Image (tube, rainbow over all chains, first blue to last red; front, side, top):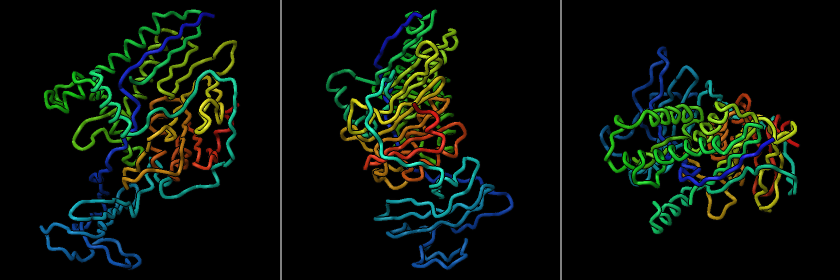
Length: 157
Length: 238
């Protein structure tokens, strides 16, 4: 058996770019039409069974000031979707899914933590004989920005 | 400075030419996609000197994959950040997959490709033995927590145990603290890499997310050094 091994450095960098979450338009089930009221003020206690068409308390065209706002529940072929945003000083500071579809991508896993499938153990530190190590190297945006800066200081980028 | 890549071929037909071909491909991808090179397609799009419509077809391929994996992971992958293009999170696994595909085309049966701790294996390390892929212990840096026995598997790990590293939940903007290490094992390195990143950010739901994906298993380590694995993970280990 011959063996050829070599190594290289490239700068594509395995950075975890974990992105700004964007609420994208959903494909709406042709049967169920969404309610036009898409921005409504969140009541303190939502009445049970409430779906869409709550009464808007903000005049159309007025920028939201601060508070929590729950969107209309939208039916998709995969199930209902509803999103709540938190706004502070006219900026969205939080986005939460109140309801998510159980879609083909198995988003049920997102809303249902299925503990019985999982095994738990106290991990051991082993000095096993291994060929390769899988592990984190640099995984943060902060790291990447710092790296970028360092590369520029070094006139490498 | 950059992402260290190791290619190890253990065939009778192993040559340095094969490895050179892999590295040529990776260098070409680096030239196209590195956000750290002013001449890359990504940098030129961000500086406004190149229109998306004039970009090479490979960029469209990557953006298509970003859309696909973005949908699969519920929006945890998006190549656009603050109006700037940066598909780095996906390009790494994609590049490793393309490198492995070159070795496949050249007829190699026994190799691994390792990019900064994300690994694609094929065949054997010798005499039919599986490749032994250690999952790094988050505290004892020279030790491993588990050993995956891989004949044709990819192993990808996301972790926050390196100094200053954080993974943020894009839904809340807050750092995810449920785990310090999240490993995904499965047939495809791109998918394993994307899942390791996205599932880490999902927090407690990340393990269940991977458990629902055909062919993929996960092993996560909590800050208390508790290991939590999906039901099929142990069968892949030494």
